[in-house]
Image 1 (cartoon, rainbow, N blue to C red):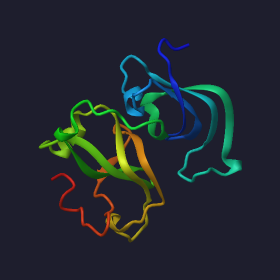
Image 2 (cartoon, one colour; image 1 turned 120 degrees about the vertical axis):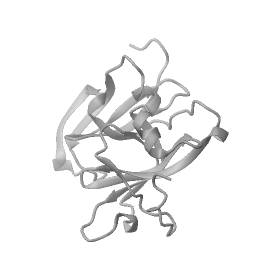
Image 3 (cartoon, rainbow, N blue to C red; image 1 turned 180 degrees about the vertical axis):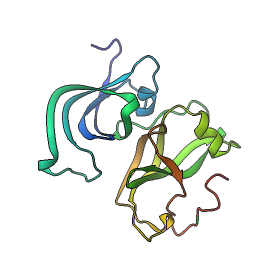
Length: 189
């Protein structure tokens, strides 16, 4: 099936309509975002797929299961974010990168974490020109709450990393703070 050897990883893929649990396959030493940003490949193959209603609750409720399939090919443009695989491999030395904390709006929740961008580049400029799939490190899922500022939200779930589709995010907002740090003035700094 594949020309190069692949490694299997469990993954949870979120689209606007579904949560898909299954296995994805990465080339050794490449990351999830690398696979998703590969040109000429419009679909992400997932094996052992369990399709659930869209949502953020993990693990999903049994009654949310809509279908199962030995294989599903997911159109990449519809992927919002996913957990699983490996973080993307930086294309430049770590010394030329800096971490910027940001939060991406996806419906009724945020995904916040640190994005590695080239030093000296404004976050807004980077987001305008970056490939769609990016790795957020030390990420958290934050549920929006009425009458509560975003920077005061507590994480619903945390991840070592999560792969996000910048093109599917509805917006970028001030990130919930880490260790009481106010990020409102530094989001696009």
